[in-house]
Length: 396
Ligand SMILES: [Ca+2]
Ligand SMILES: [Ca+2]
Ligand SMILES: [Ca+2]
Ligand SMILES: [Ca+2]
Image 1 (spheres, rainbow, N blue to C red):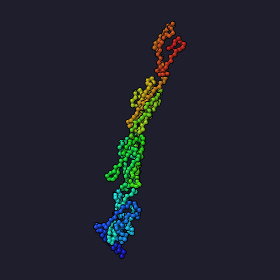
Image 2: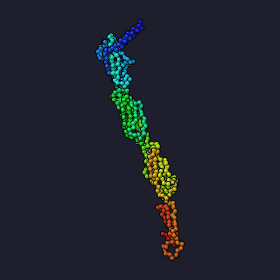
Image 3: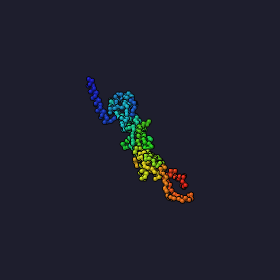
Image 4: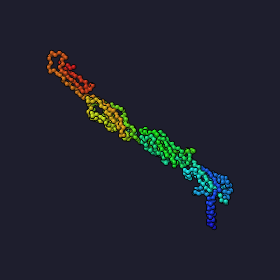
């Protein structure tokens, strides 16, 4: 008995459905259109369907008014007793329509005895319930300090599932000392973002930069998303070594043993690694000086390497070249004064001499001429001559 009733009922529904389809093809009795924001709570008011379709509540009840939806989700319910449509299930505009706008869904309200079909369309308006977000929190870039002005770096764009003003409206890059932002809208609706070098980088001044790219939507209140951009500035060989002083002066005693340190030159190059590694050499050196001095390639220390003789040369100038490995150099002048040591004996040379002298020769008669010399200089070269006091001669 029960199963027969069910079958009978099903048959009736099937018949009704066929009629409905025919009905639908022919005409819809009336239609209504509503607009609700997404994310409304269950039970929220959508519209007064009875009033808007010109039906009274009694007719809704007698006609067993109900909603027919195509999809699996029924967002709206009919409150027959009040003649209103209310939210049945939370509506997420982003899930329902994605980026499509306007966003709406439709359903039918059907009444029996007689059959009446009404079409209801509900437009779902966007609320700003999503913040712009970047695919990553951080971007790491390595940029050589010699990068030309105008060099471009592509950045990732952010995404905001909302639409209209609730979608991303602007990007900002902070700070903007070295880079400015260029944002281009693409035909497919995407955004192409580039960071353009507008002030030169200098690794010697700032080796790392941290910037923040901010994407903001235009909702009320605004929502934003950020990505940090870490920039490591790579070194370029843009500095030449510079001698710590233009001229080095050193005094060294003649006869100083080999290995005696004369002076140390040093040059500074602020670049990194081999770009800042300084080596020392004396590319143009006289043959004499080459045998007397040596320069340590790495330390710039100058040592005595031969026999220094004040009497041969009193001063030497070495032009020490301080070079980095990138072809830059500076010349540090080194003036070496040789200091005299008393290393020469006075010499006596007999120029003329009378072997015999008359006994009555008057005092002051020259008997011998001597040439006395000392190769040392200053005090070391001053010669004092004296003669035995027990002979009847004097020396002038
Ligand atoms: Ca948004
Ligand atoms: Ca939204
Ligand atoms: Ca350098
Ligand atoms: Ca550099």
